[in-house]
Image (cartoon, rainbow, N blue to C red; front, side, top):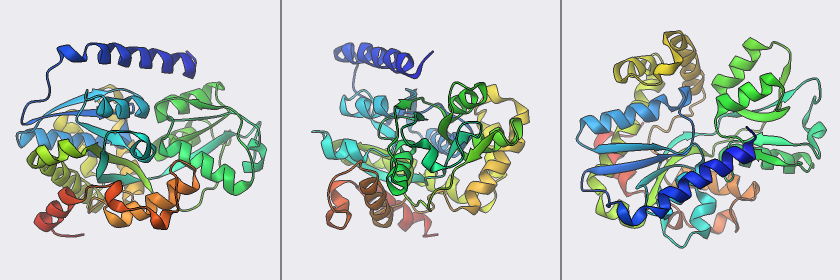
Length: 331
């Protein structure tokens, strides 16, 4: 299935859900519908564990997997979900509904990968097709920024949700240039040594995944939001201190069962690398994270305006992370 047909099917499915909106009741107090705009994988264990812990504390979380950040964002705007996961800066500037980021989950750690039979360096991608996660995603922003910095113009950009899906397409030869996360970069190196080249990227401190919701939802559901934010901070801190905890989370909550027990070693290695890079947000982000995001997404062309003139309050609601840091302490 091509990325376009996959995207069309997902959009049609979302349209069907939206069409039935009048028949759907709003979330009750204590309920939280989270739109996950990606295919959950190894990199999702921290977030999934935090959600399970929030459930243990009485928040009735429904996880809605939409496989596409665009659809997750639309779900928030359309009222079909309460909380989204992504980096919705373009949406915040353009949507009529006031959307706010309220906690950073992790910073960008993506790896542009090319088939060495066709490309060797960034310059070789001038005019060539590439594949990224979704429109407006961090993967697209990385590709656009690097193309800009390298003085090249990319060809067609395809949207292929799921880092593992893109890895398999690279292995099968249906993609020749794409971008993957650390776990799938290592898998490519192990499964096809020497076949792929990881292109260099500059240091990136911008958000990969963050939580966002409407201003009204954050105001009216502060207690539930606080629980989720606290659990995200706690899981991030525990994994950063001891990456093997990610495997404990996976086994305790029976996360990603389709991967099998053999994935435990890969999970540990992934979170060792992630922890060493300081990618997990120990204090939820806030003003410092917003400044990094403004600089990055502006350079990538995904938000408009001088980064120095953009106001944190126009994009973020930091109340929940401030309360969580006051309770848990700062790391």
